Amino acid sequence: MDAGQVPGNTVNPEPRDIYTEPSNVDVVTLRNLGPLTCMAGVFEGTRALDINPKANGAEREPFVERIELQPIDPQTNGPQLFYGLRYHTHIVKPGEVETLHDQVGYWLWEPASGALMYEPEVFGRSDGGTFEVTWPPSVSQR
Image (cartoon, rainbow, N blue to C red):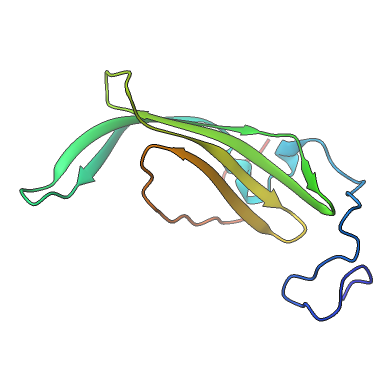
């Protein structure tokens, strides 16, 4: 146990000092995104297909999705330090301007604990899903 932690809690040890912010903050977010590194950027999918099950047979509806994942400044919360991406995803039907789905939020990475957090703010309907993160990513980083 670290000298700065409260005894008895071994799963997520709580620091004794919950007020002091880290002093060794690297301000270059892209260098510190951990498993989020390969997600930074702008992506567009133009050949997506939503399959909606119906009693008379599945409805198939194509859609276009654009997602922007932009680095944010390092964030502190007492002794915690987070690096992250602000995202905006926008979905429309091909050739239309009316929004089918719009969502903004944050992906956050806490290097000290290895915690990965997803904070969505949803407008429209959101279906659940799963993802798997591997670290280090297999793509080349610059």
